[in-house]
Image: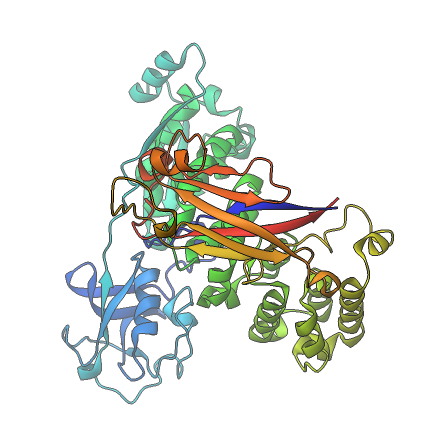
Length: 536
């Protein structure tokens, strides 16, 4: 038996500042840092720190890709323009970089290709500059109050504020910025946190925390007394990092929920990839899952972005295991994997390649594409021909045999025959019209572009290709539209898929006022209806 599920997909495509705290572990302490020298923080002559001193960058090969790397490295959303030829004045000292060649996805300017440190034929008249997009973080004013307090929380808070009787010192420093803060706390309060190792420290403890987070340390330490704290989007990252460093697992878990508001804020996907690495590093499984879900539902955009070639094996493995990936079809995903492996080169071992290839669901690749893949000369075919051909054979079997026969040979919990969310023309429909327009007071069915009929195959295999199932996709924006179809609607917009096997066919789409999310939907958003077969 084949059943069908309606998926209502919402894609957020909003740009905002890149959040860099998640990269703290891999961030160079000072080597490779960049700065802008000019009248405004967001524009100026680009300077890079190397071998103990600041130097400039020659404008040979200086383009928007290089500017994007610089601006994101500095925490701006992106670059507006490049400014060659010493527009922001001539620098002094060495010209560190020349003939830059960035892809645009690098985490820092020094990761791009260039001649070599200090190898140049330029003068300071050719010092490169950039103009960065400033942007504003519209979520920065959101406040969340966490209360895990005990009965004496107010009194303990006053004890922390006064500092009376404190007997243990916590030094907070940032080695890269040569910045340090000192706090006096009470050992009886903080000794319950084993990471501080109070019993083996002689009255003090030193921790290296980025200077960006220094303003939030006092509130964090006060939380150790009171179990109460205000969390904003801008402080959440620092508080999570501090909670991880000090081993405050409850706070770490609570603050981690706030990260869900950050996930859709960066349409370049740099933030999400960094957050996943950070989640792995801190052992935050909830954060990892939230990021993976977002990337899965935006997988088509992720694959087409420069970030695709930079994601780790661990993230690629986690993504390919999922059934909620939104992709055109399985062949599209295999092609993207091939390209990723080629870009990674020797970074990915033969065993890792084979394990990723095993996650490709050959059974669900359209038969015409399976046929074309027989003649493929891609890296996966070359390196793992037996495994590759076995996948093709099983794919052909799936396409010519009834599913009831195949299922006897497949583990019931196997995902090999579970379709992902395929958005190819055979399985999905776009409705772009999101406006209400009436020519007269009464309703004309033919004038509503939000009521459309389409058909899908009864089964993904070629055996049932000629058997079609009819569907009607409907989007209602008013009570009048709902009543004309005998539907009761309590809020708008409402999406409905009407057809075979659908029981609960209504999906209420949250609007900008009800979502309570930092990124409102644009006025011209589209609805995508996806039919996904399940076999039971």
